Length: 303
Image (cartoon, rainbow, N blue to C red; front, side):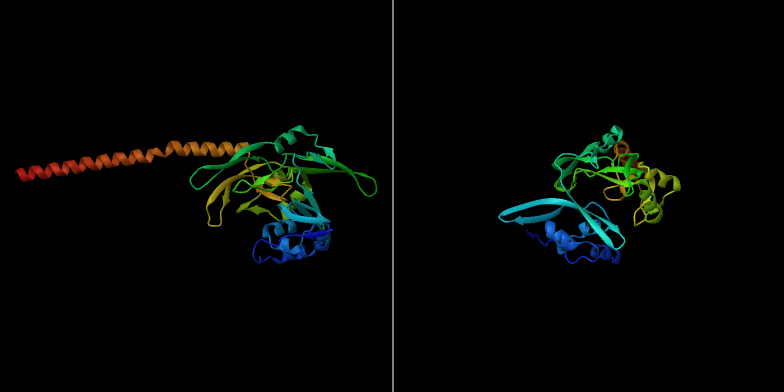
């Protein structure tokens, strides 16, 4: 089988040593031989390279495979698992329909499944405010509570693990084009999430997570945080949750957050005209005062 892949992307991206070390652990020869995925291609696409090095499910990777006269082309997503000095890379094709199975078994918790499939309508507009396209986005980064997986270890003993479940739904760019999303479930153990919060991300946007908040996030809860800060010191609020797809804390657009934003916009609309009325009152007051001055001047001249 002969493979080819276009080497297009970012120009000479520079990576931190941690990212470079992890990318050097990837079995590139296997990926190229099996799927036509070249190291140069990944390295030239900075976001995909960083996702791969951080164990995240990547954006779509374009791969081309030629078998005789038959050319097969299609997007795939990759995910790397690092153990010691070795890395294992799994590849995922894109499902046309949602796959709600975990290790071949259907997700049995209906409440979690409903949350994972909860969506809202997103609209893309051009600079003039015209609607370019509409699409559906997912509200939650995980199912909101853990599931318990029972599997057998190497000795045949049953091992139960509490895990968070996330759905890798379609993600669209500003043009409405799908650039990631395998339409399948991914899991992360609650212990891994807690370790991540303790050792890697104990704080976020200037907010130090409390032990209670870490526990809640490790259990899949979505949290409303009011005192996040930007780099220039501006305070903002958001709803956050852990994603087993991106393996990190992410901002989410839950129904609660959408309602919060709606109320905020309504409040701004109703309060916006008030200053204009005050300005008009001031203008009228100034006009009256100016009128009195002119009348006084006339009287002086008459005298």
